[in-house]
Structures are given as structure tokens and as C-alpha cells.
Amino acid sequence: MNVTEMTRQDCIALLKTQRLGRLACVRDLRPYVVPIHFAFGDDAIFSFSLPGRKVEWMQANPHVCLQVDDVGGAHGWKSVVVEGLFEELPKGNDLDDSAAGVERMIAPVDIDRKFAWSLLAAHANWWEPGALKPDHAATVSGSHLFYRIRIEAISGRQASW
Image (cartoon, rainbow, N blue to C red; front, side, top):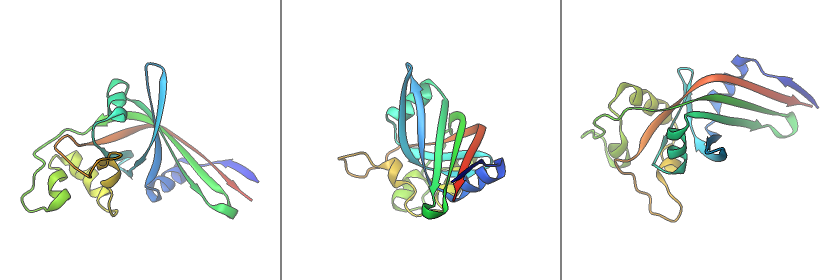
């Protein structure tokens, strides 16, 4: 097996093709890691969530880390780590009378939220992981939020056989 460093361009290429990553945050010197669905665009990571531990911890300490990988089986693997700053995207008037269902309830109006929406909505059911709580019915309320992780550093490694 040959392990090599990935270029920034290769790291970004992986981020553009993947949707699932592991977000790490820290509060009171305690780490917390959770899987998230995300989209990459404009040199940032965008995601959607309901309030909870992850959001509370990122609001308390905006320094976060995202790990994304592609395990290619017999051909090798790639892994990228993004270090960045959490930033909640400002809320606007979220109701759009022309939308329907869940999309009507979470459609953003603010320009940053519109950009996040456009990236995330390009993939089927993008909102489900952020809108579902264990053992609860799927409900999306006005408490949801869109957020961005502004990339400060990015690195990656890949292995091939």
C-alpha cells in the first residue's frame, strides 16, 4: 500500500462528490462527533440542522473539524480533514407561498441561505438527517437552521495498492 498526501485540489474534488461526513466539535474540553449530510461550495461546507447538542456546542465554540472519506475497496481510500469555523446563516422570512410540503417550511430567503439551499437541494432528501430526531416523528419547524463551516485548513491522504 502506498499512502500519499492529497493536493488541495484533490481534497476539494472529494468534498464535491461526497455528502456524508463526520463533524467534530468541542465544549468544556470534551469532544463530540456526529455524522452530517453536507454540500461543498464557495470554499465552505454547508449543512442544515434542528437545534440540539451539535448546534449548542458549535455556538459555544465555533472551531470545528469535518472528516470525509471515500473507501474505494480494493483500489484504495481517500480521507480529507477540514478545519474551520461554524457560522449560523441568518434567518429570513422562510415561508414561500409557492413552495409545498417540507420545502415550503424550510425554503430560505436570505442570500447565504439561498446559496446553501441550492447546494443541498441538488440531492434527494437532503433535509431528512437534519430534520429527524431519534424516536420522534419527522417534523420541521421554524427552529431549523442552515449553517456554514468556513474552511481555514484542509488536508488529505490517499492510499493505493
